[in-house]
Amino acid sequence: MIHQVSSPFSSAVLRKSIAILYCVLFVFCFGDLILSLGGDSNQRAQIAALLCSSWLLVGPLLAYKWDQKWNNFDVFLTPILQKTELSSLNSVIDKLTKFCLLIVSLPVLLITVGFYRGDSFFETDLGLSSNLKTEFWIIPLVFGALVAGWGVWRAVFSLAASFEVSKHIGDFSPFAGVVSSTNKNLSDFCFGVARIFGTGATVVLPVLLVGVFETSDLMRLVFYVLIVLVTGTTVALLALPAVWISRQVEGRRQIYLDGLSKEIEHLVGDLRSGNHNSNVPVWNTNVTMRLNALLEVRKHVMVHMASDTSLKMVRQIPLILIGPIGSSIVAWLALVFGKN
Image 1 (cartoon, rainbow, N blue to C red):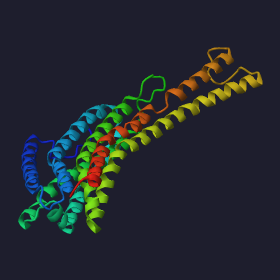
Image 2 (image 1 turned 60 degrees about the vertical axis):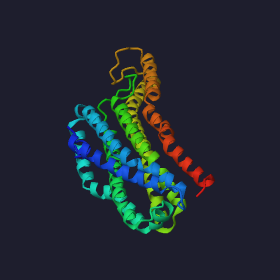
Image 3 (image 1 turned 45 degrees about the vertical axis):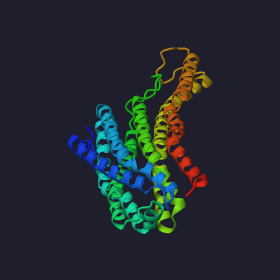
Image 4 (image 1 turned 180 degrees about the vertical axis):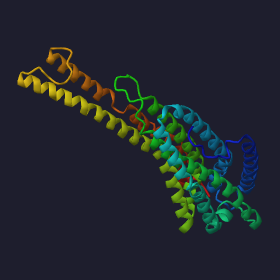
């Protein structure tokens, strides 16, 4: 069994409590923004904030979906990985867990600094002019950032686990005719996590983009950092595992081909010398036929073992980015052609 990291979204009781809490916070944020629409406020920023407020509903759901995907991946990995590989994976998870609090708190710190240094964005652009009401907004922002931080932590966790799993060589079979089951399941897991992260990015990127154009100084820097963090992590969840899988496949293929090449070179040496008494076990006395057969085997291995899994993962990157890019374009168009 792979070492499990406790998650508030894996417990049924906690999950229901969290769902109720986040629903209440969403109702407050959405209702407050609706009441603040119009007047002298920035309607573009208000609409982007309305969309982003849905993160309070979407975020916990995505976190729960991640837990389900990891549990399914764990069920597959536990009987597949060798004892040393399982031990190595658990060791990496234990070491990474020590940084959990730091990773989760990063978005919380950024949003807190941004809130208190960008008070004009909330009071003027969003129309939250009441001091009491404006100060209360730090509560849903912190809870939303907690879910975002948990998502970043799970993304880092997924990348670290994927790196260790990509080293697995137990099901390497150049003549199987199908892709490695480990690579396929690893690819499916990474694609699922990237899709979860991309869905979250679709929700939060519009308001981050609006924040970049509507704020300045430290607040704008915070928005830039968050945008890079969200988009970079989304791409990395497919790109990095693709590189690791490709490197592992190429390494195993090269080891296999090196052994095959030595036998081929020995047979070629026999033919050139006219001596067919090779110390390589030859059951067919026709060395030429054996040499041709080995050359065909080498050709098959070189063609078949091209890392189709890695190529597929790279091709899926644009699919994952459709949502975040689309929502960002809409937000940008609203900024260019919309009215304050």
